[in-house]
Length: 200
Image (cartoon, rainbow, N blue to C red; front, side, top):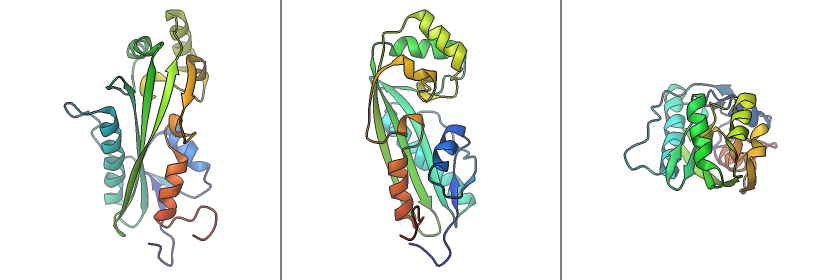
């Protein structure tokens, strides 16, 4: 897959969280905003929605940069089959957290890697099972005022004060809950010809 000159890497996301995570791999990369409608399809499961959007984002940016390797990612909180996305407002965040208190929520974090020129395409999902504490209304309000996580799926900013909302986290890719599963991403990047620890 790898040509004599390594392909450039692009993160197809404007998320500051994903950008910070990808920086951990110490590979130079650019950032491009994918133009993708994130509206769920009728009867679409949270898992299917996350998969579809991650791949759509990667493909959208790959069309603009066909010679580059592009990462797309998406996260949807799954509460008993109901998709919970970014709340956007304080009121919606309160409603989300009230729904999730005392419940197990699966954060479906999907990632796709696409290179149009080489025909490379892979995608995967890292599910993260999160058990929320039985939160009081006051705790929810205090958390939201302190953290303002209105751009986070399910209002849960686990890398900050959001960790205090939780009883437990169960997953096999530790960065997935923040928004980009780096173990799966690393595996795909190696397959696409991006050397992370020297020659592949």
